[in-house]
Image (cartoon, rainbow, N blue to C red; front, side, top):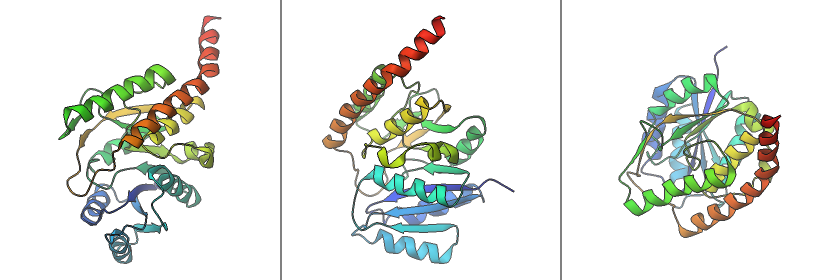
Length: 247
């Protein structure tokens, strides 16, 4: 029996993107299905997603009553993926900043690791159409994350990921505190502490083609606080590894 994969697409006001990106995702591999997690978008994204689902059984839709944030949307999607026994569960943006063609690279990479992480900051990766200040914030946020937590990846804030189901089953999803971009750091960090392997693949991140970015100062502040919190939590683990190696 072939492995089943689920792509989670959290949406809020993505009416100009959801149909096109869904079509491109499904073209990559016949094993892939989609779960659109819509936060009651006032622009009608949820209704468009329902129309797509009625025409294609590989597309599912989860409607939430209000906008509760990226992290809560992904947790809802993780629980759905676990319940329905998908082998691989993806995180992916619906705005084309994550290009569907990289799904095939993830599916190859996940055969040799527990989490496949799309990285902008390894050889072959990059960012298009970002102002220099946002690129600098993102890059140094990842340096900061690595220095404070020890998480051994170059793009800890990257949100284009593929998980083996057993990784998500092992995490206490309701205890995850983050809800913005620091959600990406926290989930990878928790998995790393449990000994799961993370392998990065290069991706080129492209600034959204349509719609409005969700980036904000609040998201930055949450990330700064959360990295400090995770850094404190990592101290016993890092000391154990350090002294364990010295024996």
